[in-house]
Amino acid sequence: MPSSRMYRLWLIFSQAATIAVAALFVVSTFRPEWLPSRAGAQLPVSIAQPSSAAPMPVARGLALRLRPITTRCSAQRLRS
Image (cartoon, rainbow, N blue to C red; front, side, top):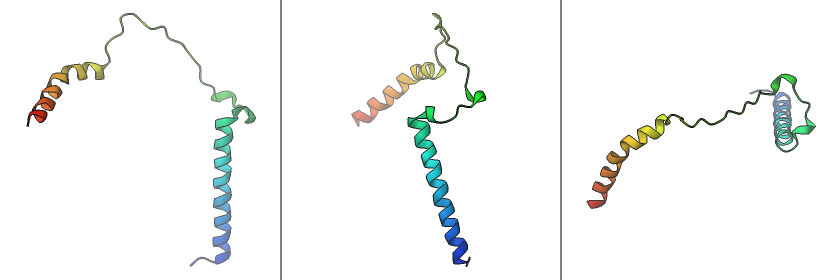
């Protein structure tokens, strides 16, 4: 069993680290202006114009193709 002194020191360290990370999270969430800004951390923002002939998303097309199958299975379940 580890010495009680070392165990106690580890508990104090781990609790202090947890409190420091929690405080950093709270400050970065509610008051980000209090933290120093990092020059390389900002992402470039580009606003794309929506096109009139946008292709149908794959998931929507798949859902439209499978709709008759799922409707038929649901109807059969309701009848029995």
